[in-house]
Image (cartoon, rainbow, N blue to C red; front, side, top):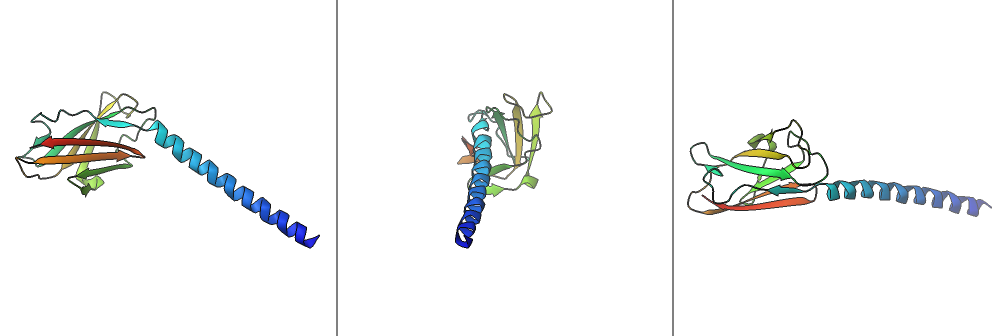
Length: 136
């Protein structure tokens, strides 16, 4: 009887842990599926890099179903393989206060680049990754 009670208690605890883990994973997967971004800047435009200000300007469109944080929270930005901290970029949502599906955000990144070379910017939110290659 004591052994059976011990086994039953262990099974209940294990089932509860597995259930909680599945619920958490399902929520994370739903966020990843609903999140999608695309960089819609023109790689041939002179507006991407401002040598005088040392800034890279990218237009990032929310192409997913989920409204994203309008302050850029949760965005990971890399330029030429170097991480850009949140203090090194500003974000402005065009035409709306919220970064809803279909809205475009202007991302201005403080980064001095070598001119006449090819560069690569990567913006990631959840599991959505947008890559943009351009020449200065």
